Amino acid sequence: MFGSLKNVFENSWYENTNNHIIKISTENQNTAWQIFSVYRTPATDDYLKINFNSDNEFKEFANKLQNRSKYKFDTTVENSDKIITLSTCYNNNSKERLVIHAKLINI
Image (cartoon, rainbow, N blue to C red):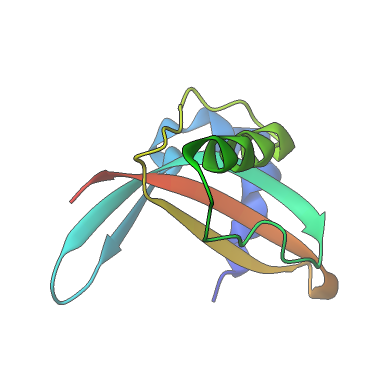
């Protein structure tokens, strides 16, 4: 289902800024998300954190995700932002993940 996501590591994908927006449509609402990080990582769950003890802890987490990115997106992540994480196996390798993080920009 996410097979074409491997294209995010091609420069042509990054150069097409239309690719920097994820659109999700459900029965109840349509949303748009601005990508701020794309990377490969060993199979781990450290990028899936959802609970934070402080705004500073969330900001440190967001900075870590941005620093991992293959590309430098012109997107800032603030404490009030809602983020989404997409993750799938990379090249059918169950020990490596392709991860995309984005923040909500429109409902």
